[in-house]
Length: 466
Image: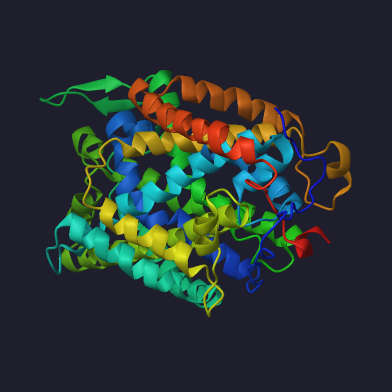
């Protein structure tokens, strides 16, 4: 790897205005609320988890549990690197500083791919959960959620922390109700959790869940809890980031894992049969376990959870674009526009650039995007783990930061496991992600690298280095 920065100094542009800095306005509680809202446990449970039920059946809980264990190692890497290099650029600022500018650029592209695709995909799920009250086509519902999230993203971050916190309480209540109902209607006991089976064909046939299927499902499992990385994107706006970034990352992972995994176990035990579980119709199971009033309450809570996720994802994504413009990733007119801050201290142009195209994407067929997102998240985590191997060399060794236990064993194990998870993914998803990465590499070779003195100057706010 080349062009590695020798120390975590801000790389000030050679010409042009002084880069703008975001305002530190939230503590660990506000940061945890925003980060948990990006994980959005309830919408993940109702929108993403059914895909795992269809592929790994009764071993969905096990796949998520293994993914969460892997995420502990990933969270250690994020906690150390996020406190060492607290920047709104998140992963790309970290990897650029520690492992080289090209590696950082590729991480930026992978993260941008994830954060631009996921919000509209999840937003379209709102239509299903508004159905008890009103029938709205999924694209229109998704576009409305994205526009609403864009308007909220223009506000002060502290205000958004309170808004998302209220929504988060409702979705945790919904997940809790699902868990209670599932356990109360358990028909199979814990035995169903230890026999991996998935419905196969018609007539009640079923097939055993192999280790290969579980490993393939880990990419989606990593995606289910991946929102804890939002704490790193918010590190420029967290008070005392050296302490609060690690606390926010680890607390978010622990809470989100519990909020998602417990209901998944309850649903697995409470499903009337394997075919119903594999179909992933969680709303239908809730209706069978309770009554229409409870079902409507749960549906509305999930709809609010999706809106909540949209708000936080727009906030996160706009910070990524803001940081990339501040770091001169684009032609100068684009950089100047994306780096503008509004009256509330938010990057308003970057927020619009994220939200409005997101609304438009709701009208596009996105059938393969869960797979592409899973590959992108896995690849991004892999490069972050590589960067963690360089976090204690040279000047970085003496910078005050939270330090992970069992270094360098943790990042080395992550590299091996995540590499194997990528190997097990569907070729189509690997080709899509690889093609986008190849185009990004060409942009690096023909535009960024020849202008390395004035472009892709990864910066770290001065007060974060003190």
